[in-house]
Length: 143
Length: 433
Image 1 (cartoon, chains in turn cyan, brown):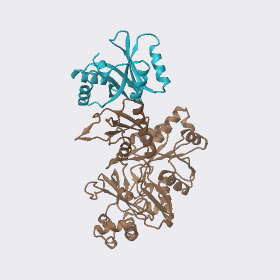
Image 2: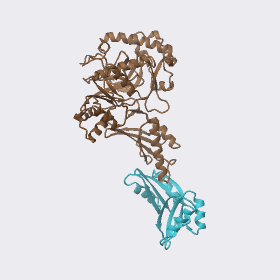
Image 3: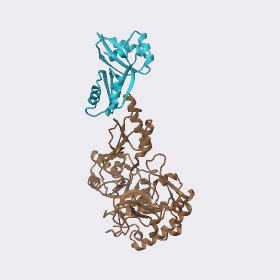
Image 4: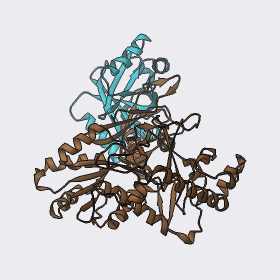
C-alpha cells in the first residue's frame, strides 16, 4: 500500500536536475510525481516513478546519492475545502507532516496528494478510518 | 637605530659560536640527565653527552618533533621539576593532544629579553603606546609580547584579540603608536577604519609588528598604505618560546634570530641533511638557554633560508627569510594552526564512515575563510532537508568548539571532489603569500 519515494541529493549547480531526470529517462523510467526542496547550497529532488527499483539502480550508476522513503498517497476530491478536511483529520490525531506535494491525476476529478508523515502505518490506518482514500502504490506507479 | 643587547646581537660570529658551543653542551647534558625521552633518543643513536663538545657536533643530535611533545603530553619533556615551572602555555587550536609548553622564571626572563630585542628593532620603546591585539591566554602571542613590551618600557595596552570597535576607540583615544596583531587582523582594522570614516591622519600609528601567520610582501604593502605605518615581520612558535624567535629590523632584509638562545639550521626535509647557507629548506631550532622545555633540533616544518652576513643595522645574528610555506599539511587560518586530520575526526563523528572532504582556504576581504566541502554519502543522506541542514550545523559548531575557527560547511555530490591518483585532494589554499 505504501508508496516508495526516491530522494536524490542535488548540488546547487546548473543542470543537475536535468542530469538526474535524463539519467532516469535513459533507463526508460517514467516519472509520476516530483518535488524539489532546496537550500542555498543544495536541494533534494523527490520523485515517484513507475519502476522504483530500476530507477534507484540507474541513479546510483549515474553517481547520485539516493535513498527511499515510504510515503502515503491519498486521493482528494477536486473541490474547494477537500484538502482542508484531510489536514483537519491529521491535525486532530496529532500527526506531523514533514512535507507534502500534490498533483492532478488521471482519475476523474481527483487530485493525488503525497504525504510524508513520521509513523506511516499508524497514519495510514487513521486516514482509512476517516474515509480518506489511499492510493495503492501499484496504482500510482501505473497511472 | 637602537639595538637592545648589542653585546649579543652584534657579537663577532666566532665569539658567538663559542657561546653557543658552551650553552649547547650544557643543554645536552641537562636533557640527557633530566628527560628520559631525550636520553632514549640519544642512546638509540649511540650518543653520550660527552660526544657533543662544540657546535660542530650539533648535527649528530637526533631531531625532535611536534609528535614527541604530543606523545609526552602534557609535561613529559619538561626538564625541570614542576615546582620550577611558573607558566604553562599550549598551542592554539588543536584537539585533545595540544602541545604544552612550560616556562621557568628564567625562561620568562629569556622570553622578555628576546621580545625586547624584537620591539627595539621595530623602534618600540619607552615613548611608545603599544596596543597588543594578539590573544591573551594559552596562546603565546599576547603574553609573550606583553612582557617584552613592559621590559622596554612601552605603555602597554593589553586589549587582546577581537572587539574591533573597542580596538579603534582605544587606538584613537589613547594615541596608540604601535600595533601588534596578525597581519590579516591589521588589514581588517584598516577596513573598519575606512568603513567608519576615521581620518587615518588623526591616528598616531607608526609601526606594527605582525606575525603568527604567513603573509606576503603584497600584504605588507597593503597594510602600510592603508594604515599609513611601517609593517614589521616577527616570527615565533610556542615550542621554541613563542614570539621572539625571529624579528625584522627597520632595514627589513630578513628576520634576525637571537642565536645566543636559539640555534637555527636549515635541513633537507626528506634526508635530514643540513643545507648550506642560502639554501631553501626546513627550519630547525635548538634552544640553548631554556630550562623548562629545552628542545633539541626541533623541526618547525616552516620553509625558509638562512643568511649569516652582517646586516646594515649592525646586528651580526643569522637572518631567516620570511617563511614561504610548510613541509607538512598544517594550515594557519586566522593565526590558528589547523591540520586536515583534525577536521577529519570531526567529520567522522557526523557519519558512520569518514566522508570525502576538501578544505578550501581563501582570503576574502583580508580575512581567511575556510570552506569545508563534504561529499554526500548514503549513510548521512536524508529525504528531509532539515536533517541535512542539521548535519551542516553540527559540523560547523563542532569545528568551532574544537578548533576555534569558523568554517562554512557545504554538502556536495559524491565524486565531485578532485582526486589525484585515487586520493582525494584534501586542501586547496587559494591564498597568495
